[in-house]
Image (cartoon, rainbow, N blue to C red; front, side, top):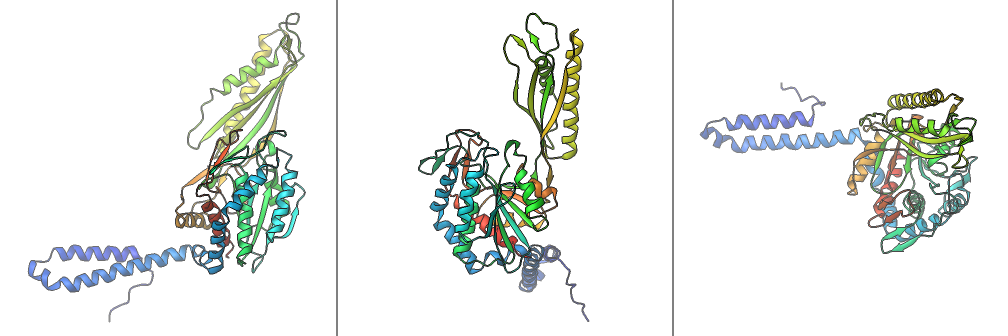
Amino acid sequence: MKRPLPVSISGVTIQRAAWRLGSGFKRLDAPAHARSHGRLADVRLALTLTAAILSAAAVHARSPRLQAPTDNASVETAARSVRANDEKTLADQVRLCEVPAPPFGERARAAVVRDMLHAVGLKSVRIDREGNVVGDRPGRSPRPNVVLAAHLDTVFPGGTPVKVRRAGSILSGPGIADNCRGLAVLIAVARALDSAAVQTAGTVTFAATVGEEGLGDLRGARTLLGDTLKGRVDRFVALDGTGESITNIAVGSRRYRVTFRGSGGHSYNNFGRANPAHALARAVARISELPVPSRPKTTFNVGRIGGGTSVNAIPADAWFEIDLRSTDEAVLATLDRSVQKIVDDAVAVENTRWKNGALTVSSERIGDRPAGRTDERVPIVETARSISSRLGMSTALGAASTDANIAIQLGIPAIAIGGGGRGTGSHTLDESFDSTGSFRGTERALRLVVALSRP
């Protein structure tokens, strides 16, 4: 009696058997070749088809979240709505961008987003204690709870002109790409789900966060995940910027304001006193020569320098702000220690240089973003890549600093994705957004939250 094949045999194993069968077939003499051609070819075809079936079954078993949730009729209706309402999404992008949202001044834009989320049918729309706008779209069950978030703030200070200009498919204005695009997509996804009456398996929470840029230090995401929604988030997707990016690696950063202090004095009469500006210059020059690894990518930048009162006065203080980044926490910590040693050495050298050396230095940490990663084999990453592939978008993975850093630190499966289109000049007054084909970014976000809402 023949034993049946074990059910665990793989499609690859069967495929190899088929090719081995073919190799043996080629070694037959010519008459045998002719007699056996039909029968062996049929066996080989059957084995190959079996391999294909088993391979497809294996993929389905590994990725159950990638299938049905994006294929039902209501989701397809919602996707068509996204495409049909692309101009509405762009109009929202312009509207939001023309409401200033400088660092620590996001309140006016938050109020507009709150009203827009009310209008597209979200429940319990509120502004939390940090200023985040939060609204829920209940599913058949409370869990899993998927958070779709986009940050409200820009890097531009209050008083920056925010009028958006349009020339064909190009929108131009400070913040139009980062992150007015993310906010517009956030609202468009909620609108499409509502218009098509999509019933998700779990709850989708929409959030517009404060403090993502600059010295905001992800304060909005910290409060959202550590207080407002603490213990209630199963998956987290940040909508940040433009393009087709999928970010699963969180770039960590440490930021400092380093201040050198002394007694100051007249530039001529008190010459010989230790000079805070000179110590600062020594430190910055040595930092600029620090070797850093390219893998993991590790960087430093002195972004601002200030101090003193007059060209003919020894400054009583001088300061600089520095940004240190890496995708690896240990490497980031090593860079941090190197910078701190350079700062201390600069004070010691300046004090030794002059008889009246009495400089001191303080290093205040003004930013601390955790590094980390969501493994590419985790379903949230696989799902994002699968949906991107279906839509003809890039499936490449990348690294960035976003609100997803905090979720990753807390052990929540998290990624950040671009909102479609193409942005240029980010963080400059010449920032622009090319809306050509940008609806695909909205559609990807829509399909992704529906898929991720499944258990």
